Length: 278
Length: 353
Image (cartoon, rainbow over all chains, first blue to last red; front, side, top):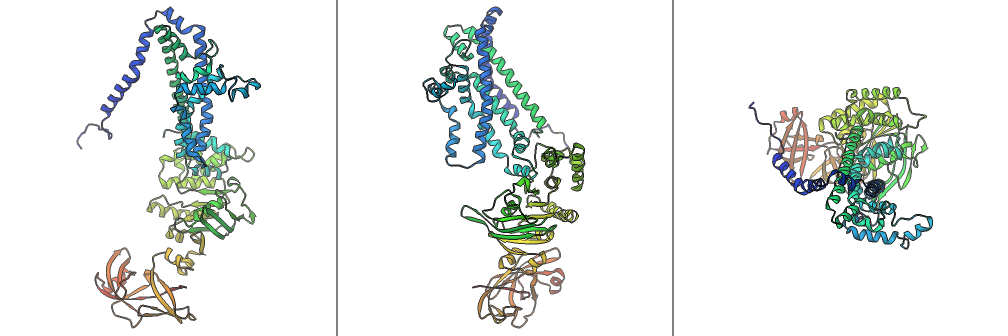
């Protein structure tokens, strides 16, 4: 047989990879590296001052902490919503399905104003929580509420198709073998949807870290208490402290990158443990 | 364990999937539920398993009412058409699943689980695949693993829903023989659903023929094939020729041909349909009095030991299918386009009201 060059069955690898990298560069990598370049115009002391002052550190904690909690909440309730939407038929299901995407479509400022209106001391929900000693608006809890709101669609939309794919027969098989509902869930369903669930978590988390519009209204923005990092960046920009703003942004980028990388690593690791990826 | 099914009804909306079905499956028998798709056979199987609930009627296992028992308490092994293996588990873990989910008190220890699983994998002759994952197996292998998994919990009843439906013809044939041998070894009461009459006739001890949510006939393969109770059973089991006729005092008149019957001696001039299997159409080169049709050979399919002929009657221009042995075919030296005479035997006549 003649020695042929090793051809890929899918042609155009070089061309499409080239375009993908060019596209990613223009849209993502170049603007982000500009952030770092601008941040490095500061000397070390100023840089440290900008990114490690107590107020900024408090905002990191709030942003990443609230985003993490919000994403976790979304994992639980997003899964529940996806479950209801795939496994049951009920009146108005299409309507509920469309509702899920609402946080995507709504301008975030509108969401923020609406949330702060209903959760404030005089709002619908806020006035009922007040006697119980729960303050939502203008506290870190409010931040969590807003970040949960905007992250919901991610988990639902990543888990939903996987659940739809998972045949009811597999669950029936498990039940006929004597498994109870809980065993069916954690031995059969969970391993199947686990990758999608983590992807949904990562997306909701990433989105929440960068969220600005919906948070600032309900957060109250008290320094050291309910001030998020994106707000700090905006504040610095408004004070024409461009280098300081980009320095904080650069730190956020690095932390986000490390966290998302860690989440992907965890996903890879758990996939291997669960025997997926085959 | 025997299964008694009493007056089961099940509707899906306005569609009646099962209409008053009653059935007994004696201990240790292998019973086939046979019928066209949509006849309710799978619904009935799922009701026996507890995966579906009947609108009315009851299911008894060994005399005990099990109608309200949940699937996991019924001790049934269920095998699905599309295997329904757990794709994130190895073959070993798939088979072990039923043992591992048992409550602590009745759960065997690890060594016992290993022993049992390997025993089952040996039974289905796939022990060497223990560490593989389901997507790495062929269809036939997957279905045997699914069977081993169902047997692991030592079910009292084995239920199989079109177990060979998704497999190709050769594997299907091998597997159904294998299932028959396995059943002869284990003697576990089994019910399997199929739309393939050949499969039912070959494998089952008894066949339940179903159509439109009712049971048409229950009997041994021989009984349902040789003595179909209804026109539907006749048509569903094997190829058949239909002759529109009039029956009067034990004689069926088809066109100008008169044929004596073993039954219907009291019938007075009634419309009827006569059914004749292709192998019960005799072919002659010369007319045989009043009892043969003149027909033209349109096609000859000479495949294997049986020669299949497609003929056209001169009187009505309707088609008749006949099967003759190759020996007979060679003696008669038949050719396409030739004129021959047909004589049906073993007519089964169903009167029309």
